[in-house]
Amino acid sequence: MALHTRLRSRSLLSSARLLCTGSPASVRPLPEQGPQSEILGDHLIYTHEHRALKEALRKIIDQEINPHVDQWEAEGIFPAHKVFKILGTAGFLGVNKPVEYGGLGLDFSFSMAVSEELGHIHCGGVPMAIGVQTDMATPALARFGSEALKKEFLQPSILGDKVACLGVSEAGAGSDVSSIRTKAVRKGDEYVINGGKLWTTNGTQADWMCLLANTSDGPPHKNKSLICLPMKLPGVHVARTIKKIGMWSSDTAEVFFDDVRVPCSNVIGQEGMGFTYQMLQFQEERLWAVANIMTTMDLILQQTVDYTRQRKVFSRPVLSHQAVHFRLAELQTEVELLRSLFYRAVALYMKGNDVTLLASMAKLKGGRLARELADSCLQFWGGMGFTSDVLVSRFFRDGRLMSIGGGADEVMLGIICKYMDTLPKKRFSKVGSSCAKT
Ligand SMILES: Cc1cc2nc3c(=O)[nH]c(=O)nc-3n(C[C@H](O)[C@H](O)[C@H](O)COP(=O)(O)OP(=O)(O)OC[C@H]3O[C@@H](n4cnc5c(N)ncnc54)[C@H](O)[C@@H]3O)c2cc1C
View 1 (cartoon, protein in one colour):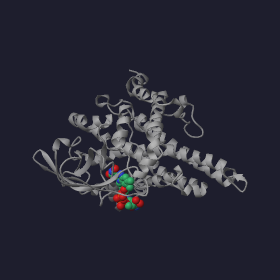
View 2 (cartoon, protein in one colour):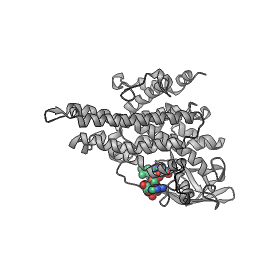
View 3 (cartoon, helix red, strand yellow):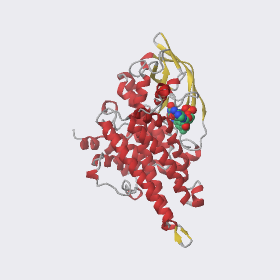
View 4 (cartoon, protein in one colour):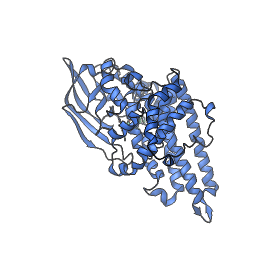
C-alpha cells in the first residue's frame, strides 16, 4: 500500500476527525520551516506525507496541549496518561513502530518529523516526556523484544494506554553508563532486582520502566540487560520528585528497587546485550533531541524578531540596530547549519549507516547553540526577557538541559575524538566506555 494511502487510512484520519470538532479559526496555519523555507518537493527528507503528519500533529498541539502548558508548568507535572491517550489514538506515539503493535509502520524520518513538530509545544518538559515514550524507552523493545513483551508493553505504549520511562542513569553513574550498580540476580525463572535510578523522566506516572541493570559479573559492556519492569511491582519505590531549574511540567523521579521480582522473560532480546541495545537507542534519542530543539530555536528567533520590531529604544525599533539584526541573522545561520547536519545524519541512518559520529556532533552543536541562542535572544527582550511571561525565558531554562541530558557535551566530544583518533591512548579505553553514555 502506498505510504500516502497508509497514512490516510490509519490514524491521520482519526486525528483529523478529532480535530474537526474544534473551531477551524483556532487552528493556526503551519509556518514554514526556517526563514528560507524549502520548496516541499525539494526537501532533502520530507514529502507531502510528512507534511500531512506534521499538520495533523500541530492541530493537536494547538488545541489539546498548548492551552494547558502554563498550568502544567505551574503545577510541576502534566497529565501524561491523558495527553498520551490523545496522541496515541491519533497515531503519533508509534509512527515508525510496527503495524502489528498499533504503529504506523513508517520509516525513521517520520519520527523525526513528529519530534520537529513537538518543538512547537510551549515548554521543553512535555515534548521530552513524549520523546522518552517514543524514541528513548521503546526503540530497543520494538527491535529486539519478544512477541509477548511487545504485546504487554509496546502496544499499550503506542496506543497511549501505558506511560513508559527509561531507567539508565543512577546517583553514581550518569555519563559513564558502564558503571551502573543496579543488579538483577537470577533466582529460578525470576530476576531479583536491587538498586536505584535517578533522573527518571515520567518516573512518578510511568506504568513500566525500560530498565538497564547488571545481570552478571562479567565485563561492563557484556554484563547488562534491558528489562521491562512494571512500576506497580512490590519493592519499586518512587522516592521523590526532583525539583529542577527547568522542564517544570516534566516529573523527574528518583526510584529505588528493593528485592523486586520480575520474570526473566521480561528481558529485552538477549541477556547481556543491554549495553549494546542501549547504545543503539541513544542514537535515536540524540537525533530526536536535535529535531525537537531546532523547531523551538526557530520559534524563539521569530518571536524575538517580532518583539524587537515593535519595541522601540531611542525612538527606533530595537531590531533596527545593526547589533541586533546582525546577531539574529548569525543565529539563524547557525540553526540552518545544524539543520543540514541533522538531515544528513537522518538520511544516512535511514540507509542503514552507523551515524554515531554525526548524531554526536549534532547533539553537541544543538546543546551549545540552544544556550547561545537563548542567552542572546533573551537579552534583546530586556526586562521582559527576565519575566516568566515570555517563552524565551522558559527556553532559557529548559534548553539548558540539552548540553547535559542524553550525554553531556563532553561525552559527545569524547565520541567525536574517538572517531578522530585523537584521544590519548592510555585513556582511550576508559573514555571509550564513557562515550557509551547516553
Ligand atoms: C531533567 C533530566 C531528565 C533526565 N531524564 C533521564 C531519564 O529519563 N532516564 C535516564 O536514564 N537519565 C535521565 N537523565 C540523566 C541524564 O542523562 C544525566 O544527567 C546525564 O547523562 C549526565 O549524567 P550526570 O548527571 O550523572 O553527570 P556526571 O556523569 O556526574 O557528569 C558531570 C559532568 O561531568 C562532565 N563530564 C562528563 N564526562 C566527561 C568527560 N569524558 N570529560 C570531561 N568532562 C566530562 C560533564 O560536564 C558532565 O555534565 C535526566 C537528567 C535530567 C537533568
